[in-house]
Amino acid sequence: DVKVTQSSRYLVKRTGEKVFLECVQDMDHENMFWYRQDPGLGLRLIYFSYDVKMKEKGDIPEGYSVSREKKERFSLILESASTNQTSMYLCASSPIGYSYEQYFGPGTRLTVT
Amino acid sequence: KNEVEQSPQNLTAQEGEFITINCSYSVGISALHWLQQHPGGGIVSLFMLSSGKKKHGRLIATINIQEKHSSLHITASHPRDSAVYICAVTPTLIQGAQKLVFGQGTRLTINP
Image 1: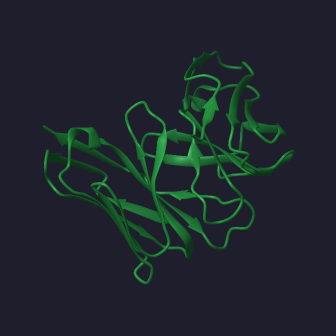
Image 2: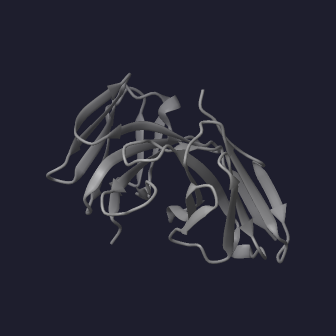
């Protein structure tokens, strides 16, 4: 059974803290993605990676960075958390190519106070 | 204007009714996806299709490439079908990793 796991389901952080969100997949997928989901705005792509140490900006990369040191792990970093980064964060992975579905993790609901 | 538009945004129906959710897109695509998200839950892929029709249990997805339109149908709807249904497309012109462009989602509530 395919699996994408995220380090936390719920997280509460303070403004200015550095926040790490971890995502691990066990399917040997090349592609990994970080999204945020907000009411009325849907899912928006923050960053994605198509190989180890490779990353590309998505639609809303400001305030975020990512790290992919190993194929199975993709980390999202909030360098200095702000209240407007309160959101649901979803990680996904997929095999390389254009005809594959993405597999999503359970999500991390982050609250920045 | 969003590249992927869904309608309706919200839908409430009685158990047993036939449900249709529509998705229109404005870009060339290599695939269209229907996703399901239960409250508080992660997202599950229901269908991925590039032509024709697919069926899984009570769910049917169709796509018309020429009209850039897809529909998700649920027959004999049940309260457990209550969820947000998201349409997403894989545009053909984006290089690199397979990126999805998402619709806003349709919140479906089925009352017993």
